[in-house]
Amino acid sequence: MQQTRRHTLAKLAAAVAALATAGTVTSASAHEHDDDGYQTGMVFTSSNAASGNQLLVYARSKRGTLSLLTRVDTGGLGSGAGLGSQGAVTLSSNGRYLHVVNAGSDSVSTFELRPHELRLKSVVPSGGQHPISVAESDGTVFVLNDLGLGNVVGFSNVRGQLKPLAGARGNLSVAGGAGAAQVGLNAHGDTLVVTEKNTNRLSSFTVGDDGRLGAPVVTASPGLTPFGFAFTRRNTLVVSEAVGGAAGASTVSSYQVSRKAAGTPVVVSPAVADSQSAACWVAVTPNGRWAFISNTGSSTVSSYSIAPGGAISLVQATAGQTGAGSSPADSAISPEGDRLYVRNGRTATIAAYVIGADGSLTATPFAAGLPATAVGLAAN
Image (cartoon, rainbow, N blue to C red; front, top):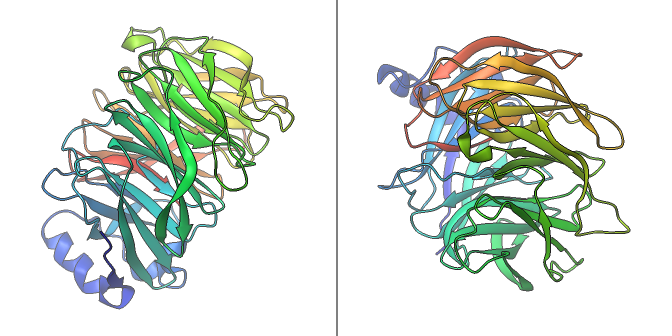
């Protein structure tokens, strides 16, 4: 199925005013962002509504506060419930495209971000059941499906149209029940990684220039329940470990992936504790110095430092607080590296922080009014 829809910035002022009347928008104006349009200064999430998924676009002001700019149908259906994943909304490496999973209709939507236009370019089958995460590098897109047997499926992005790639399909470490949480690509785009919560493993693959996947490599996780992760530009992989949600038991591990051993993560720092509960989502700063972990069970954000060789150290177990019972989840860092955004599942808010030069977090006003079913977070 393919659809093309347009939403121009010329109409946004009226749209924002109408939405504000309905109580869904904060007071910041849209015109602050007209110069760059959708290509910079935005935060994206998805409604994941079972009746019809939508992409929600928030504008970032110069102060870092968020205001809902627009909502656009994805052309697919959400699941209406949490996906237990990271990467449900993913920006392309060149910043021109945004990919959104439609878990309820087994499809993926691709939007083109233009200076003054947001356009839905395609909606394609995910190649499996219940897509939950997307990864992209230089126009090669991989989708993780976690139900049925579970798999990863590769596509080529041709001007917003996702085309299936021959040989770009990989299985997880077990046929069904792996509890996959995220798919991701390293900085070089030659290594694909999937975390598996139920098996306590990472499945990884080499990625050829044509997108073909090599034989799977299975790596035991040093900590239980590996969940979200992020790569630095030096190919350090930082992975959260929720330890089944046990109180105060969460850990984080780091790995290194070298060009000589593409497809094989090598443990550098195993299971470094943060004394928090249900560490699940991970974001790293563009300079690769800091990692921030959303601890869903304790409603906090932990900070870790990342050494050039990939070793990690806990800096602050509670670098940020998202509010009692807020259940922080998806996180995203601005391209400038100075803002952290965290979606809070139970309070339907997006927390916002200024990132200091020392990795500290200073809270700024939160954005409220998200759909209770929202999943995914990305920032440009």
